[in-house]
Image (cartoon, rainbow, N blue to C red; front, side, top):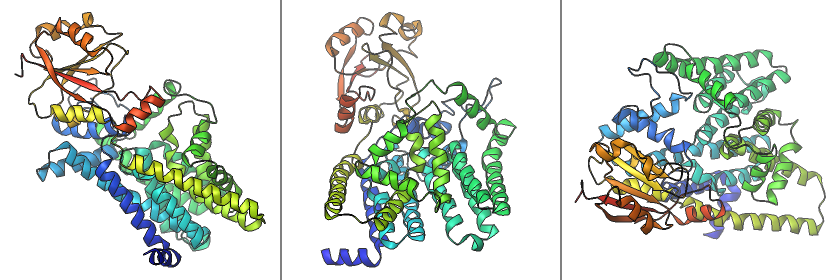
Length: 507
C-alpha cells in the first residue's frame, strides 16, 4: 500500500490530492455541524429559510412595507439557498439538520475547485513537485475542510476567483483569446456578487493586464465583469427595489460610516493572522516566497497584494475578511520558496533545519485538522433549538444571563419556528421585562433558557418570582472545542444552556 501511494504521488499526485480533499470534506460534512461565525448562519441560512416560513423575518425584503429600504446585503448567494431550501422541501425534506447536511455536502464539493485549480495554477507556473505541495496544502490544511463546508461568503467566493484567474493564465498571454478573457470577467463578476470586496481582486487582475500593455484585453475583461454584475447584482436589486445596485450602495455607505464600529486592530493584524494560520516557522518561509517572484507572476501577486493592502489599512479587521486570498498566498509562497531553494546552496545543517520545519508543520497541522474537521461549532445554541423543535407553537422564550450585557442570538432555523424572545441580562434586569410578557398569554414564555452555569439555582429562584411554574427540562453542553475557545478568549461565549419549561403551557 505504501509503495502504491508513493508511486501514485510520483506519477499523478493530483488524484491522491483530490482523494484527500474529498475525504476530509466528507468528514467535515458529517461531523462538523453548527456554524462557524455569526454571518455564515444568520446572514445566509436564517435569512433564506425565513423567506419561506415567515416570510422575511429579518426584514431585508421590500414586501408590502412603505418604509422599506435596502439593508446592504447581496441577495445572490442567499437567494441560491432560498431556492435550495424550496427544492428540498418540495422533496419533503424539512428537518433542519438534514438540510444543513446537504448544504455542507454541496459546499464541500464546490471547494474542490479551489484544490484542483490551485494545483493546476502551481503546475502551470512551476513544476509537478511544487504543484503537489500546493495541492496538498489546499486539500488538508487544518482549517480548509472546516471552512469549506461553512456558508462564509469569504470562502464561497474563492473558487470563482481561482477559475477566473486560471482562465487568464491557462495559456500564454498572446494565446489567451478575447472570449476567454471576457468569460474570466464574467466569473469574477460572480465572485463580486457573492462577496463585494472581491472587486479589489478583480481590479488587480485588470491592472495587471494594463501593466502588461494588454489594453484591449483589459477592456474586454472589464466589460465581462460589468455585464456579470449588472445582470446578477444589478438585476436582482432592480427587481426588488426598482433600481440597480441598491444593496451595493447601502453596503458601501454602511461600511464607511461603521468602519470603526467592529473589530479594529493594528495594521499588521492580517500579516500575523496569515503567519499563524499557515503555522510558523514554515509560514514565514511561505510569506517570503509570496514576495520573491512578484514580478514574474504579477497576475497572481498584484490582485492578492492589493487585496491584502486594502484590508491592512481599512479599520474593520475581522479575521474572515482576508480568507479569499489565502490560496493565492499559498500558491505563490510555495512556488517562490521553491525558487529560492533552487537558487541558493544550503548547508546540510540548513537542509535539516528546513526538514524539521516541515515535520513540525505536518504534526501540528494533523492535530488541528483532526480537531477542527470534527468540530461541532456553536453546539449548545444549535442543539438547544433542535431540542425545542419537538414542541409545537412555542411562541415566546425568555433568555436569561444576568452576568452579561447581552445574550447571543439563537439560530431559530433549527427550531423550525420564528418566535419572540426577551432577554434578562445585567443591562436588562427582570424588572424591565415588557408588561406584555407578564400579562399577555401570547408573549408569556413557554421556556426559559439560562446561559452559563454560574449560580443557576439562584437565578431560577429569581425567575420563579415572575414565572412560578417553571420546571427543569434539560441542559445542553457546548462542544469541547467551543469550551477551549471560550477558555482562550471569553468573547467566544458558547456557554452551557440550561432549559426550564413553563408548565402553564407544557405539562
